[in-house]
Image 1 (cartoon, one colour):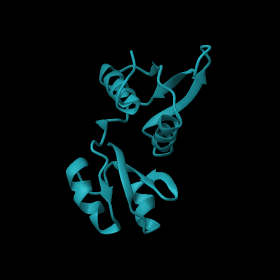
Image 2: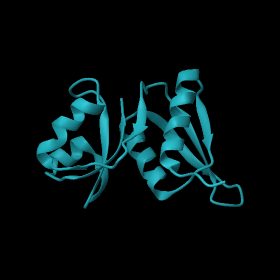
Image 3: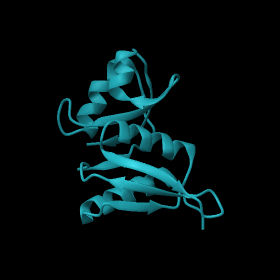
Length: 130
């Protein structure tokens, strides 16, 4: 059976394991989008290191959890956001100012909304984490 949204499934599993207090999780879904989002979360210190464990197919992602995530999820539909609209979406998806990150797909690649603001870029909202 195929999954409709592998990123949503991955982030949901991370959230569930965080709530249970687990220190690692194994995710079967493995794609460039998921690895990029995990790298951004790792750079922001929400998750620890992750690695690809070979399984004969695409590989399984082994993710170390730090216990720093309060909530994480995808943003559907993928709203287009301009430079002037970041504050509106921060208020919608994040609990407080300067608390948490929105992950944005821009013409310069995937980055957090803070980096996109500095570079004066708009894009499509992918996910949020705080």
